[in-house]
Image (cartoon, rainbow, N blue to C red):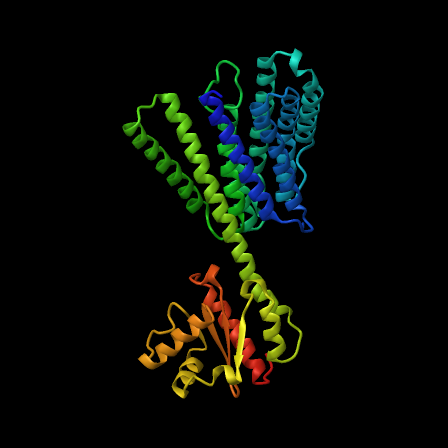
Length: 397
C-alpha cells in the first residue's frame, strides 16, 4: 500500500472511531426536541461514508465506491436537519429542495459511477457540498439570536464555525487535478467536530477555551513533526502525512477523554438525582439504596461492633469533620487519630468516610477512585452525608 493511501486510511479510520465514541456518548434515549436523533443521523451518514471509503482502499471492492458516493451526497441534508433541530425552526424551502435534489441526483448516479468521468463526478459533488455548507453556515450565522437562549446560541455558533472549518478540509478529499494534497483531511475536520460536539454540554464555557485548546494541539503537533524532520530526513509530502496522522491520534485521545469526563459528570449528577428521587423512610433504607448506586458501588455501612476499636477522640474528630477524604483526612489530626484513620482507609480501600450519627456511632466508607480528586466530589458527598445524618436524627429535610 502506498504511503499516501496508508495516511488516508489511518485518518478516515480514526475519524470513524471518533464518531462511534460520540455516538456512544449520546446514548440511546432522545428528548422531545429530537436533537440526539438528528445527531445520530449525521453520525450514521459520516460513518457510512468514511467506512465504505476505508474498506474500498483495503479490499478494492468496486461497489463500495457507489456506497461512498451515495453517503457523501446525504451529508448536506443530514447537517441541515441537525441545524433545524438546534435552531427549533424550519429552514427556507429552497435549502431543503436543494439538498434533497442533490442527494437524489447523486444516489441515482452512483450505480453508473464506473462508466462516468471520475473527475466530473468529483467536481460536481464538491460543488454541491461547498454550496450546501456555505448556505447552511450563512443561514445559521444570520439567525435571529433573540429567539434562542445564550446556551443555545453558544452551541449553534460552535456548529456554524465547524461547518466553515469542514469546507477547506473536505475539499482535500477530491482528486480533481487542481486539488491534490498529500492526504485527505476531511477526517481531521470530523474529529474536531466530534470534540466540539462533546463540549456542547459545557455551555457556560465560551468559545475561546475550546478554540485555544484546538490551536495549541495543532501547534504542538506541528512542532513535533518539525522536530521529527531534524531526526529523520523527511520530504514535504511525508511531513504533511505524518502531521495528519499525529493530529488524528491526538484528537482521538482528546475525544475519548472528553467522553469519559461527560460520563463521570453524568454519574455524579445521578448521585444527586438519587437524593431527590428517594421517597423511603429512615437513614437505613437511604443508605442501602446508596450502596446500589453505581458511583459508590460497594459502600460499606459500619456500626456497632465494627467500630469498637475506635476511641472517643477519633469519634469526636470524625463527628466534627463529617466527611473525610483519603487525601486530606489527616490534616490537623493527632498522631493517634491519624493512625486510626490510615487503618480505616486501608482496611476498606476507601477514598471517603462519611459520619452518619453518634447515637449509635455510624460511618459509611466509600470507594470513588474515578472522582477522588474532583473538586465537586466532597461537596456531593457532603450533601449525601447531611441528608443521611438528618434522617438518622429523625428530622425533616
